[in-house]
Image (cartoon, rainbow over the protein chains, first blue to last red):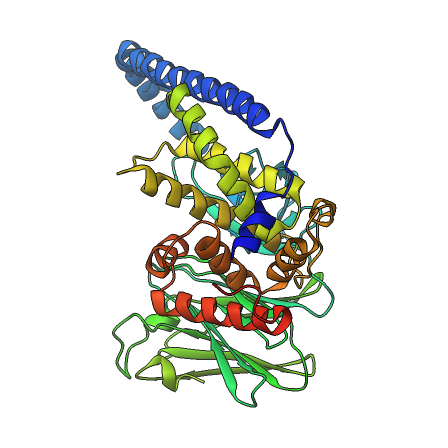
Length: 323
Length: 157
C-alpha cells in the first residue's frame, strides 16, 4: 500500500494552484455577498413602492379595466398577449444549459382568418438556462437548439403572465454513433423508474435500475448506466447504453415504489413519455396511452441495433419479476 | 461565508480533493478545474457541518459528483489516458502501480483510493459515495483482485 500512497503523493499539480484558487474564491465570495445585499435592497425598495402607489394604482386599474372591457369586445381574441417561459436542462445531469436557442413557431390558425402576427419567435436561455418571451396566445412548436446537443422539438402552450409554472425542456448531449440514450419524463408527482434489462457476459441477464445503476463488463467497460434517478414528478430519468453483441436490450418504465393493485393506473395517469436517442439524433418517442392498468410498461427492445416497439403494460409484485 | 473559513478549507482539503479528482479525470489540469468548481459550490451552498470530518466528506462527495458529471457530458467509454506527469514519477514501480489503479473501473478506483490513500473504512466510504457497505466491500475486493493479477502481490498490505 505504501507504494500507492507514494505514487499519488508524487502527482504534480500546479505549484500555485492553492494561491490562485484562494484568490478566485475570495473574489467570488465578495461578489456573492454584494449580490445578496443588492437583492435584499431591491426587494425592500419594491415593497416600499408597492405600499406608496397601491391605492393610486388600484384606482387607475379600475378605470382602465372598465375602458378595456368595452374596447376588447370587438377585438380578435387571438391577438391577446401571453408568455412562454421555461428552463433547458441536460438530460444526463439535469444541469441548466445557457445560450440555448428556442425557436417558437405558432401552429396554423384556421384557414379563414388572416394571420398578421409574427409566426416565428426566438428566445435564448440565460446563464441559468431560463427563458421567458412574450407571444401571441396560442399553441406552439418549440425547437430547442444548442451546439453539442441533439436538437429537440416539443409542443408548448402559451400561458398567462401571472402563471408561475416553468416548462422544463431537456436536451441530450450528442453521443458516439452506436450509443443509445432513453430519457423518461412524466407529469405527476409519483416516483417512476426506468429499467434496462440487458445480457450480461455470463450468459444471463442484468437489470439496470435505481439499485443497480451501472453495468461494467468483465473487461472493465461501462456499457450502461442510470445517469439520473428522479424520484419526483416530470423527470427526467435517463439511461445511456452501448449495446454489444446480439443480445436483447429491453427498456421498461415501472412504478415500483407506489402501492399498486391490478386495477391501478397510476403509471398511465402519469403520462410517461420515453424519448430514444441514438448517436446524434432522436429515433423514437413513446407515450403510454391513458387508462392502462398495471405497474410496468415495457416500451421497446433493441437487438442488433434494430428497435422494436413492445408497448405492453403488466403488473408485477416485486422488482425481481419485472423482465 | 467568512473569508477565513474559505482559506482554512482550501489549505486543509485541496490536496486531498485534487488527488481524488485525479483518479477520475486522469489529468492534473482537469482535476484542478473540478476542485475549483467544488470549492465554488462549497462557497455558494455554505452548508453547516457537525465537524471537520463531515466537512471533508461533503467536499469529497461534491468532487466525485462533479467528476462524474464532467465525464458524462461527453459520454464515452472510459480509457486509461494518463497524464504526462504520471510518467515523470522517478520510481517506476510506483508509477506503474498508479497507472494500473487508474485503469480500474471508476467505482473500484474510487473505493481503492478512499481506503488506501485517505484511510477511510468501508462504512465511511459507503456514506461518502452513497452506496451500501456490502457493495463497497465487494468493489474493494474486486479492485484488489484485478490489481493482484497484474502486480503479483505488490499491492497487498
